[in-house]
Image (cartoon, rainbow, N blue to C red):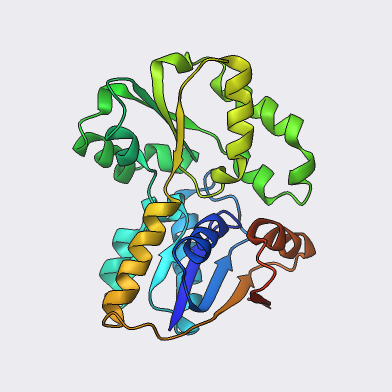
Length: 270
């Protein structure tokens, strides 16, 4: 079975890693990171829709099914259209872990961080309405975190990253919030940074930081079992990384994020 993962860049690797380490994902995995066009969240929506479909077609050309759209922005913009047009492909979407927060918010507020496109899309707004939590949810764009995640020097930019996160959170009394939802697959890379900043701003704050990687991974495994009639088709993992612009930086960041030394990884420029 060939399993596709798609993201605007490197963020979807957080979902892929979760799927392999904690859900025992096996098979031929094709991860397409569109490093030529990242970040999506601040670009024209029609342009982004066009390149999303082009990249999904690339994964289909490799024979991938199912395909995980491991990008909140791409899911918000295109998953409904893709499911209708390519109805023989199983698409696993990504959405902020708002339901996790809604189920446990104890009448406190919820702060959702995402890209500028995601926070204004109907998909997220409809989910919030459906959960009947509109009055307690705040939406906050955090596009620069995507740029930090893609930077080869990311691991050396702790102070700069913390300063940016502090500038985002400084105007919120986090003691009034139960959850911060990391609504972009790039954002979990900065979980520790969020913890550090929150501890600095509100030393006694008891707030949960959640993301959607676990739910996406469980959904993927469930669909794979259904497609294979509960049978496993492969006992090992091979990862093929497809990228859209030649970049040694991109390859280095893949290794840094995945950190899976015993798994074979190769690279393909598309």
